[in-house]
Image (cartoon, rainbow, N blue to C red):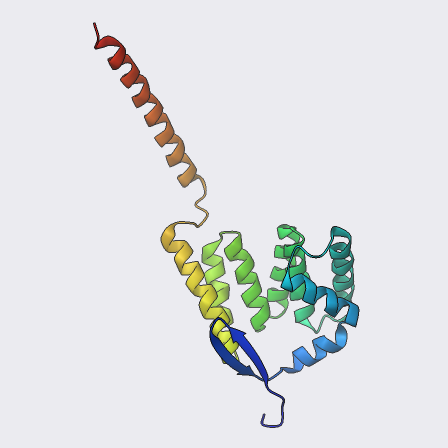
Length: 194
């Protein structure tokens, strides 16, 4: 491990030192310079790519993922690109498949958990984020999983989780109560001046 180059990653105010994994080296070899450039632009600012560019990128990543099924990171990148393209259903399917094909892949677990978190499916998001934390190989990965888990806990505590019909029914019942109470108030005020 001493002979491998060290990369610096800054998350918030903390500087982490990491060693490139073999899959990262293989991923860099699998992606063409044009795709790498588009991915870099997209991750810096998700709104910078036009619809046609995103469609082209999705097509290229789909082809690469089909030709290199051993590189699960390609599927994860495809899922992330589908999220940027506002296609969460397709992204959910791609990331679910990547987790099923490689349950021991940190990035697949983390990004699937993140998508579930953004879709407010907090129980499953917490489970996949916990799995990613267990798979973390370095301090950067541990920190990413820890922050995502903290966000999920905050969402649960503040009640931002999808609640099904229970939340909606209670809101409707509250509106009906207020409407009935408002109607009585009007009747009482109309009768009191007499």
